[in-house]
Structure formats: C-alpha cells, structure tokens
Length: 207
Image 1 (cartoon, one colour):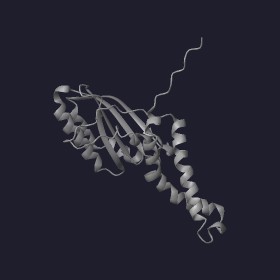
Image 2 (cartoon, one colour):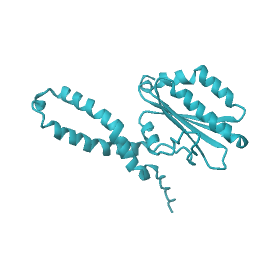
Image 3 (tube, helix red, strand yellow):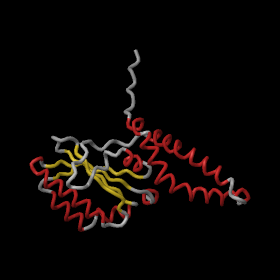
Image 4 (tube, rainbow, N blue to C red):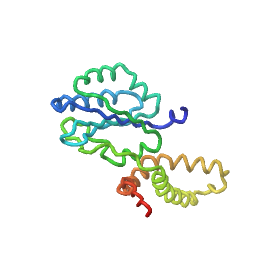
C-alpha cells in the first residue's frame, strides 16, 4: 500500500448514458471535471465516447497519490455530483492504474479528450496500457541518451569527478528525474505511439 501511495493514480470509469439525454450528460461530465479541479493533488481529467451512436462513455481522471484520490472520491461534492447524474448515467466498470502506466495513458491522447463542453469529444474508447516489456523498452530508449548526455556535460564541471560516487548519483538523479518525467518520456511515448498501441500478433496453431 505504501508503494501505491507514492505514485500518481489514474482512474478510468465506463458508464452507460441515456442517448436521449446526451446534452445533459455532456454538461454533467464537465461539471464533474470542474469539481475535481478544485481538489488538492488533481493532475487532469477527460472523457470520450465509444462512438457517435454508442451509449458507452469513458471518463478518466488522475490524482497525485492514493490519499488525494480518496479525498475526492469520498467527498460530499462528488457524492452530490454522482447523485445528480443517476437518472441518465449508470456506472459499468472502474479501473485504476498506478505508477508508470499513467504516463502511457497521456501519450495516447485519445484518453484525455477535450473537457470544454462546446468541443466535441474524441470518438475513441479508452485504450489499454501497453505490455510491461514495451513500457520498459520505452523508458530505456528515453533514459539512455539522456543519461549519456548528462554524464558527458557534467564531465566539464570542475571537480565533479572528485565528488563521492553516492553524491554524484544523487545530483544526477535529482536533475534527470524531472527532465525524464516532464519532457523526455512524454516525447518518447508520442514518438513510439504506433508501436505501443500495436496489438500482439496471434500465434499460428502448430500443425
């Protein structure tokens, strides 16, 4: 549980919406986003529809950690909001994703649909996270050249090589972690998006 508390958590919720009340549902979704924005730890949200004629709608939101997520999910504001949507919205499934998988959600773009009520949402379902081995490859592709470049540049800093190894590693990780999180990894996941989203090939049955 302690490990889960330390990572951002993405929640994807599948709901069935009364097709005769689409306008109300659109405003209702936006109202939920506006309420969540005011809570500490809120990192973003969005919603999509499975298709123009589908009654399946997907909502996704992300919080800094489990504590801030639960503050939102147990709040009186969210309870009021859910009650107001019960006549036309029925929750079907909820999924939580923690840690590294949250980065790949944002990279797909389709899961974070526009939340402006005047803008039509993207007509795509929420995609599954890529396999863990693809996540690991993606992280390595971003980390290796970033770390290599940082090590080369730090070599020009006078006296840096004489600093004890644990302190050098501490300084390097402190510099590279925000660079990886906010710049390198989002860029790499966008670059590798077709490969990350490619479904696995089915194995041919042996004769």
